Length: 224
Length: 77
Image (cartoon, rainbow over all chains, first blue to last red; front, side, top):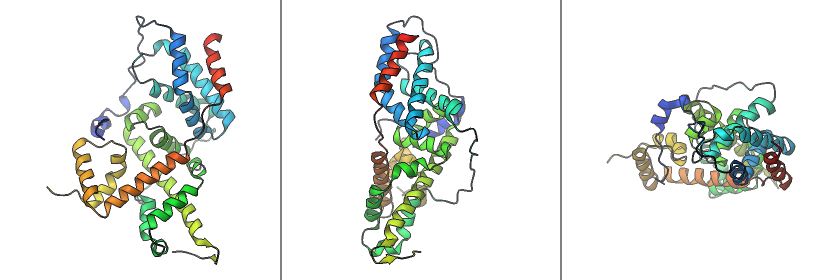
């Protein structure tokens, strides 16, 4: 648990001004660039493709996005400093490429809402449901239904800014600081997008779990 | 030692699970979760939910033709 310690407050202060120190030219580290880059491709291709697929929601677009990402990365590879965070560097190029070329023209407005929804939305709904309670173990019932849910579609339904934060944190395992660098936004913005995205995802999953509950062989029931 | 209040645990739970809390706060929260019959199950539920989401959204590996296309870039330029 304590292996990767992070200090949120310190990160918050540094905020958006953090830059990759990877982008410094180091002519002494010549090596075999093509071989080094090929190794990066082998290591990160699957991850970038997965993330690209979640972003574009389309296999052809994801392939083009990943190819363009590696093309840009290869062209900038002489500026990449070995030993720094290659994965975050590549994801940053992926996100920038996606935003520049693949995103729909219309921009989704950043939704700023009063924080009227609690973080653990799904858990709170489960606790409130008397229907579920009557069935025994409400938590286990809901998690079992979510196992059967189309979680990918629920994720795909999220607005893009929130989806990107959830993908980078929950599926790709980046830290808030790394995501801030990848997206070029302050850490506070990362946290607000991520938490909002998780709440929206939980809402979608709750709707699914509830529908599964109320449509019974005996007919439909309406719930509270 | 006074326990961290439950509302605080709910508010910080995701940051805790993301390993983004400072060590002192993380320790206090972990201690609370172990002792509290309300917050323990909340944490357990969130952890299992996240594992399910990760499993269900694991995706697929890149197709072989994409690997070849990308590696071909190296010789083209």
